[in-house]
Image (cartoon, rainbow, N blue to C red):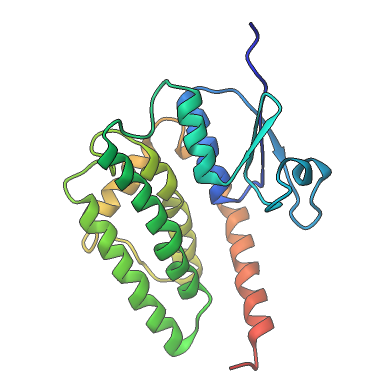
Length: 226
């Protein structure tokens, strides 16, 4: 029996899409990547994700799955090789918890820092640093979030490796270093060195251009407002 066709609808720079690429890579699943323009959404995207009209969208055997965490769990349940969620129920819950922490707490605090100036920037830095300390504490004594094996939470939080370095360069400020965050720094290296990860990050120069443009556009729209 021929393998069912797998397609991934996404954008080149999305960290949420990158999660799915990593999971498929770890599972050894071949797929076709379809680049989407979110300013001009294709009929295919609107067909496969009519509710949110966002990426990523995984299409497997003609059936579509949206939302990155839902897709990750679908991938893990469909392709059993190299499981990314632990077997233990508590550890599975913790993997989901830290994944949500990344999206709901850490990512917003980093973005707020990135688009803030003056006193607000200092306040945002305090919030982002507090979240970094939380991650540092969780990773103490571990290679990955679940111990020795790269898994769900690592894939979910892997955007940190690339995004933080981009923000550091643009803002000319070192946020994560080995002295203050030894465990987090080690995890970032372990993650990026994992087979199939390092070469999958989007081109740095292209990402720097995008982030600088986003920041300048935000400042332009908020200039003169309180």
